[in-house]
Image (tube, rainbow, N blue to C red):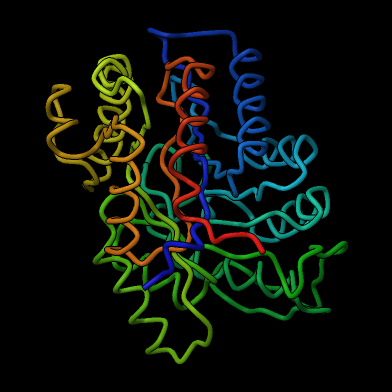
Length: 342
């Protein structure tokens, strides 16, 4: 079980811009970047970026350029993809691009990948959905080898490399952390087999156990690393008012995710139709700082994570208003989970 006094806190962004709350994209991106800079000053440890394609609300399709922008605008905060849909990319290019970001960030980059699930994304990008498992498995191996080895020889279904290499290589040695995300048991096992850590979200006690058990079964050394958190945890002086303001935006997000997952015959969220459902099911938690401390503590004890993050800006919710809640969380919640500095 992880030590709750050495917990890292992260942010998670999708840069969505729904039609009913549409704002100028330049302003939206600038507001997000400014918030990340402010959160670095507040003591947040990492920021995660997530990828999807063909989204009418502009869900971030190009997260490596965003990671590069964050790299040059910040000094300390770690920058991760949570997650990049690896089967939709060429692994050699990802190895090169992420090595460059690691250099730009002075060794602060972390690559998190997922398998993807939306058929229309695979169709539009010319990738067979049925190949996604073998693509991510081979891609993870190719990236790790290109990051760490002088010359790479690899023969698989999708990649055939002979004396391949990338230059420059990442700044971090032996390599940047490599995370695998997902909510199926296969994702947790893949993370234990091919990654350095597992990224989950929401209730992940069972998935965390699968990941740790597989890690130890494979004889891997070191403490297995886990990142996860509540879908939404918002610290507020006026929780009821904050809940009523944020709930429509979270309902929108859950509705779109359920639509996407339904098209892929998968499920992550229960059926949610009203703000009351969000509250009763624990999806949107707008609470006092003390209640937030209790919820974080319970989550850490249950899942055994070292990295806690919660989705940061609900689609269409004013970014600057959310910064107020992030400030309160940093000031009155995060210190309870940090070791005293000598």
